[in-house]
Image (cartoon, rainbow, N blue to C red):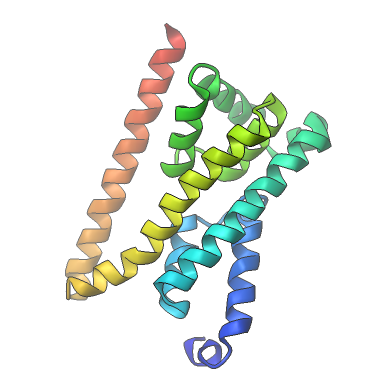
Length: 186
């Protein structure tokens, strides 16, 4: 694959943009995997830039689908349990919770976008939150490949580092969920 893509950077960029665009709408791929792969093939800055623009475009499309497509259409795509979870998370501190939900993988992006569109979060506020959070995630994920290479780790050391990072993200996600659930009960 790398040999096939190496001479066709423009085609790779278009494919990567399309994946990033569709990801917050209907693709079940985690952003960390797609941005990391894009960074390995395209380089950190191009991957971060394309990821940011593509994902932000997809996020806005999902928001507008929810805003104008209405609840009937969204309810077909998203489980009621996830929508209730979203509404509980966002009900109190809209801006900080939305930013947290986008940066820490508590809920998939499509649920956040659809929920914001249905619940009436203002476009201006949602766009600001989406831009800020995707700027953080796109660039940090894209440059993580360079960071890992600069450490000159063996495959085993790199695997252990990834497991530790994944564990920290998972632990942070679980703690965030518990805090949000406790806050909802009070």
